[in-house]
Length: 293
Image (cartoon, rainbow, N blue to C red; front, side, top):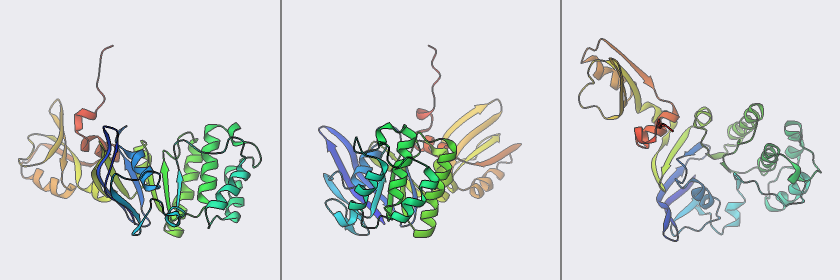
């Protein structure tokens, strides 16, 4: 289990993380989401042991991560901004990674040439952004990490390669119980692969639970008639006689209460992760605003 316990980090007068608590179960695919400036990248740098917290601690299975080479050797990462030595080729970066990660798998590295089909000896600086991202996956997967931390991991990849990369990662999760943390703004994609989600805002964790629980505890109600009394409504809109409300509760609970008011029409629908994200962050305040230019 990877845990952040009451982590606070301040840069000058700016508090990037504010008593952040986060728990990633072993073998989980965890989606870390939030608006720009929420503190996701700062949290990731703490998980990697790059930053030392002002307060709190970060542990991997009970062991501190910061200044702990043994723990760091178990963590593979792909940042949004890929690192490589300016004149290095993919083969030279393999040797570099092999010197850092004790479980680097040379045989797997050779097999993955069939997947990524990247030139082994050309300087990586000549690679396109998408090719550099593929190279990062090629290297990181071969470190055989216990934890893989990915920041906007498939940005710049074409749809076929995105599917290929997710297939490799999920295969690793299934076979080795690898723990994966993914920070991304592509919520529709995260919804297909994640089983746990944490929503951050202003350096805090607003909501953290399994995706199934999250989608099962908030629903969209469409109704012609009055809303039942006592419901926790996160957002409400109206189009003609049809009211649409985002409400707390499971589909079964909401439907049972709606039947008591005998509306002429109603429907209870599940929310997507994107809708949950919007309404947990304040509903209409995060919707697209129509402004006449």
